[in-house]
Length: 208
Image (cartoon, rainbow, N blue to C red; front, top):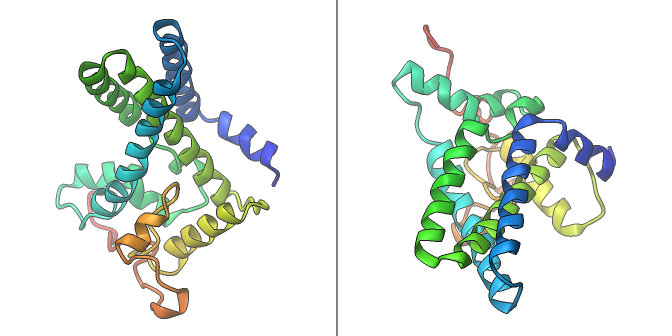
Protein backbone atom coordinates (compact mmCIF):
# COMPACT_ATOMS: atom_id res chain seq x y z
CA UNK A 1 0.00 0.00 0.00
CA UNK A 2 1.48 3.35 -1.08
CA UNK A 3 0.81 6.91 0.07
CA UNK A 4 -1.08 7.57 -3.17
CA UNK A 5 -3.16 4.42 -2.79
CA UNK A 6 -4.09 5.34 0.78
CA UNK A 7 -5.10 8.84 -0.32
CA UNK A 8 -7.26 7.46 -3.12
CA UNK A 9 -9.03 5.17 -0.66
CA UNK A 10 -9.39 8.12 1.70
CA UNK A 11 -11.10 10.22 -0.95
CA UNK A 12 -13.37 7.35 -1.97
CA UNK A 13 -15.45 7.58 1.20
CA UNK A 14 -18.38 9.95 1.48
CA UNK A 15 -17.52 10.90 5.06
CA UNK A 16 -14.09 12.21 4.09
CA UNK A 17 -15.37 13.97 0.98
CA UNK A 18 -17.98 15.73 3.10
CA UNK A 19 -15.39 16.78 5.68
CA UNK A 20 -13.03 17.94 2.92
CA UNK A 21 -15.76 20.07 1.30
CA UNK A 22 -16.45 21.71 4.67
CA UNK A 23 -12.74 22.48 5.00
CA UNK A 24 -12.37 23.90 1.49
CA UNK A 25 -15.44 26.10 1.88
CA UNK A 26 -14.10 27.41 5.19
CA UNK A 27 -10.67 28.11 3.67
CA UNK A 28 -12.22 29.92 0.69
CA UNK A 29 -14.47 31.99 2.94
CA UNK A 30 -11.57 32.80 5.27
CA UNK A 31 -9.37 33.92 2.38
CA UNK A 32 -12.13 36.20 1.10
CA UNK A 33 -12.74 37.75 4.51
CA UNK A 34 -9.33 38.36 6.01
CA UNK A 35 -5.77 38.91 4.73
CA UNK A 36 -3.16 36.24 5.32
CA UNK A 37 -0.78 37.38 8.04
CA UNK A 38 0.94 36.16 11.18
CA UNK A 39 -2.37 36.24 13.06
CA UNK A 40 -3.83 33.88 10.47
CA UNK A 41 -1.15 31.30 11.21
CA UNK A 42 -1.57 31.81 14.95
CA UNK A 43 -5.35 31.38 14.81
CA UNK A 44 -5.06 28.26 12.63
CA UNK A 45 -2.41 26.85 14.97
CA UNK A 46 -4.74 27.44 17.91
CA UNK A 47 -7.46 25.50 16.09
CA UNK A 48 -5.07 22.62 15.41
CA UNK A 49 -4.00 22.63 19.05
CA UNK A 50 -7.64 22.48 20.13
CA UNK A 51 -8.13 19.26 18.14
CA UNK A 52 -4.92 17.80 19.59
CA UNK A 53 -6.18 18.55 23.10
CA UNK A 54 -9.68 17.11 22.71
CA UNK A 55 -8.80 13.98 20.72
CA UNK A 56 -7.56 12.07 23.75
CA UNK A 57 -10.47 12.78 26.14
CA UNK A 58 -13.01 12.03 23.41
CA UNK A 59 -11.36 8.72 22.58
CA UNK A 60 -10.74 7.59 26.14
CA UNK A 61 -13.67 9.21 27.92
CA UNK A 62 -16.52 8.86 25.43
CA UNK A 63 -15.58 6.22 22.88
CA UNK A 64 -14.32 3.89 25.62
CA UNK A 65 -17.15 4.55 28.06
CA UNK A 66 -18.68 1.65 30.03
CA UNK A 67 -21.26 -0.37 28.15
CA UNK A 68 -24.45 1.73 27.77
CA UNK A 69 -27.67 0.19 29.07
CA UNK A 70 -29.86 1.51 26.27
CA UNK A 71 -29.99 -0.81 23.20
CA UNK A 72 -30.37 2.23 20.94
CA UNK A 73 -27.30 3.86 22.45
CA UNK A 74 -25.35 0.61 22.13
CA UNK A 75 -26.16 0.55 18.42
CA UNK A 76 -25.06 4.18 18.14
CA UNK A 77 -21.84 3.41 20.00
CA UNK A 78 -21.22 0.40 17.74
CA UNK A 79 -21.19 2.71 14.72
CA UNK A 80 -19.02 5.26 16.47
CA UNK A 81 -16.42 2.95 17.99
CA UNK A 82 -17.14 -0.51 19.41
CA UNK A 83 -17.89 -1.86 15.94
CA UNK A 84 -14.50 -0.58 14.81
CA UNK A 85 -12.81 -2.58 17.56
CA UNK A 86 -14.73 -5.71 16.61
CA UNK A 87 -13.70 -5.33 12.96
CA UNK A 88 -10.66 -3.01 12.88
CA UNK A 89 -9.95 -3.50 9.19
CA UNK A 90 -13.43 -2.61 7.95
CA UNK A 91 -12.91 0.84 6.38
CA UNK A 92 -16.59 1.82 6.64
CA UNK A 93 -16.26 1.91 10.44
CA UNK A 94 -13.07 3.97 10.51
CA UNK A 95 -14.45 7.42 9.80
CA UNK A 96 -16.45 9.87 11.85
CA UNK A 97 -19.94 9.77 10.26
CA UNK A 98 -21.28 12.90 8.57
CA UNK A 99 -24.12 13.16 11.11
CA UNK A 100 -21.44 13.79 13.73
CA UNK A 101 -19.13 16.00 11.68
CA UNK A 102 -21.96 18.25 10.43
CA UNK A 103 -23.18 19.40 13.87
CA UNK A 104 -19.56 19.47 15.08
CA UNK A 105 -18.67 21.88 12.30
CA UNK A 106 -21.62 24.11 13.17
CA UNK A 107 -20.80 24.04 16.86
CA UNK A 108 -17.05 24.61 16.67
CA UNK A 109 -17.28 27.10 13.80
CA UNK A 110 -20.18 28.98 15.36
CA UNK A 111 -18.53 29.32 18.76
CA UNK A 112 -15.19 30.30 17.20
CA UNK A 113 -16.71 32.99 14.97
CA UNK A 114 -18.91 34.31 17.78
CA UNK A 115 -15.86 34.57 20.05
CA UNK A 116 -13.22 35.82 17.61
CA UNK A 117 -14.99 37.13 14.50
CA UNK A 118 -13.10 36.52 11.27
CA UNK A 119 -10.20 34.98 13.23
CA UNK A 120 -12.67 32.32 14.29
CA UNK A 121 -12.83 31.10 10.70
CA UNK A 122 -9.07 30.71 10.72
CA UNK A 123 -9.27 28.85 14.01
CA UNK A 124 -11.87 26.56 12.47
CA UNK A 125 -9.68 25.88 9.43
CA UNK A 126 -6.83 24.77 11.68
CA UNK A 127 -9.14 22.59 13.73
CA UNK A 128 -10.84 20.99 10.74
CA UNK A 129 -7.61 20.51 8.81
CA UNK A 130 -6.17 18.57 11.76
CA UNK A 131 -9.31 16.43 11.88
CA UNK A 132 -8.74 15.56 8.21
CA UNK A 133 -5.15 14.57 9.02
CA UNK A 134 -6.45 12.39 11.85
CA UNK A 135 -8.83 10.61 9.48
CA UNK A 136 -6.08 10.00 6.91
CA UNK A 137 -3.68 8.66 9.54
CA UNK A 138 -6.33 6.37 10.97
CA UNK A 139 -7.09 4.90 7.55
CA UNK A 140 -3.40 4.55 6.65
CA UNK A 141 -2.70 2.63 9.85
CA UNK A 142 -5.52 0.17 9.26
CA UNK A 143 -4.61 -0.29 5.60
CA UNK A 144 -1.18 -1.38 6.86
CA UNK A 145 0.63 1.49 5.15
CA UNK A 146 4.16 1.22 6.49
CA UNK A 147 5.59 4.59 5.52
CA UNK A 148 9.12 5.79 6.15
CA UNK A 149 8.44 8.58 8.59
CA UNK A 150 9.52 7.64 12.11
CA UNK A 151 6.76 9.65 13.77
CA UNK A 152 4.15 7.92 11.65
CA UNK A 153 5.61 4.49 12.44
CA UNK A 154 5.60 5.35 16.15
CA UNK A 155 1.91 6.35 15.94
CA UNK A 156 1.09 3.25 13.91
CA UNK A 157 2.71 0.91 16.43
CA UNK A 158 0.80 2.48 19.32
CA UNK A 159 -2.53 2.26 17.53
CA UNK A 160 -2.00 -1.37 16.61
CA UNK A 161 -1.25 -2.10 20.27
CA UNK A 162 -4.47 -0.31 21.21
CA UNK A 163 -6.43 -2.61 18.90
CA UNK A 164 -4.64 -5.91 19.39
CA UNK A 165 -2.87 -5.71 22.76
CA UNK A 166 -4.90 -3.69 25.26
CA UNK A 167 -7.67 -1.16 24.61
CA UNK A 168 -6.95 0.70 27.87
CA UNK A 169 -3.74 2.21 26.50
CA UNK A 170 -2.34 4.03 23.45
CA UNK A 171 -5.33 6.30 22.71
CA UNK A 172 -3.59 9.04 20.74
CA UNK A 173 -3.27 9.23 16.96
CA UNK A 174 -2.57 12.83 16.01
CA UNK A 175 -1.42 13.49 19.59
CA UNK A 176 0.37 10.47 21.08
CA UNK A 177 2.06 12.79 23.59
CA UNK A 178 -1.18 12.88 25.56
CA UNK A 179 -0.66 9.20 26.36
CA UNK A 180 2.63 10.03 28.04
CA UNK A 181 1.03 12.80 30.08
CA UNK A 182 -1.82 10.50 31.15
CA UNK A 183 0.49 7.49 31.62
CA UNK A 184 -1.28 5.38 29.01
CA UNK A 185 1.73 4.73 26.79
CA UNK A 186 3.58 1.87 28.50
CA UNK A 187 6.02 -0.50 26.91
CA UNK A 188 4.07 -3.31 25.27
CA UNK A 189 5.64 -5.92 27.52
CA UNK A 190 4.50 -4.10 30.65
CA UNK A 191 0.80 -4.82 30.16
CA UNK A 192 -1.17 -8.02 29.66
CA UNK A 193 -3.10 -8.74 26.50
CA UNK A 194 -6.70 -7.75 27.21
CA UNK A 195 -9.50 -10.28 26.78
CA UNK A 196 -11.83 -7.44 25.78
CA UNK A 197 -9.56 -5.70 23.29
CA UNK A 198 -11.93 -6.59 20.43
CA UNK A 199 -15.26 -6.26 22.27
CA UNK A 200 -14.59 -3.40 24.74
CA UNK A 201 -16.71 -5.49 27.09
CA UNK A 202 -19.73 -5.04 24.80
CA UNK A 203 -20.77 -8.68 24.75
CA UNK A 204 -23.64 -9.63 22.41
CA UNK A 205 -27.00 -8.77 23.95
CA UNK A 206 -30.50 -9.66 22.86
CA UNK A 207 -32.05 -6.77 20.98
CA UNK A 208 -28.74 -5.16 19.96
